Image (cartoon, rainbow, N blue to C red; front, side, top):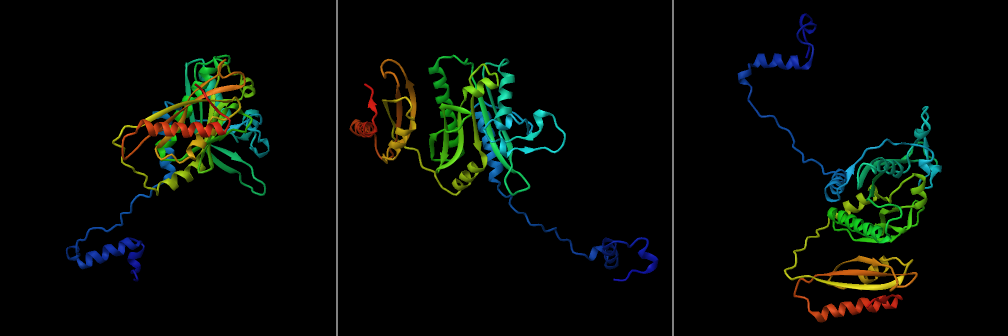
Length: 353
């Protein structure tokens, strides 16, 4: 199309002007009215955003936590909290000593959040969804890792009754497990903790399909002292990347099962075992017996005293049972009890009477 010179510098300068001229020439009334066509595509599902939202709602609504936001800067001392100073990423700009590095642990800032609130509230529950940064050999850019870190402190002093501290830990472990199961029907397993910043006798790792997902436990007494804390703190973090992989895998599984119309059953059994033995050992052993009625098994209580004796503890396990075809009989419950007792005895545990 060649526009006359006396017009191309004035009113016909863009393609839309040509369209207008054609319309006027043809007359607008001769142009058929048609609705605009546009593809309407469904919004893509982001499992990452969904999982983030579910975890934040779970921490705040289910567990009663409050969310905090912290800077990603840290001191050299903070970056040694988990014993990995060598992967610290230094900031080139001139910064104060306490902000010279990008953080490689989410814990120090959370501990300070708890510390600043301990004198104001009897119970402090905080969580943070944040990143850590780690230097890698041969790469110019650092690696970002996403975590859900959390910290909990009840009104318990350092010299508080040990039984109360254990009850707090067991209760939070149970609540934390419920949080995971609210996301998807995961098969959770527990293993012993081997780090240096959590208490070796009151910490554990949580796994899904043998992949480490989270850790939690009381802060190590040495770290407790270095931060000047006057109360016990339960710390933990969720590896968001690993949990996301497990969450996406479970999205394609149809796990619905109609609830049973028959009443369930419970079995409480107490076993005496060595103090250093993990309570998860017997639970994992029972799960391997493939008891079809077994819905879950968890630690109900831990007792220490004269009866178990020095160096020993009494652990009470609760087995939750369910049947979908008929009501439980006392004979079947006794069979399951005998099976559990038999397997525990083989492992050197003694039934407490």
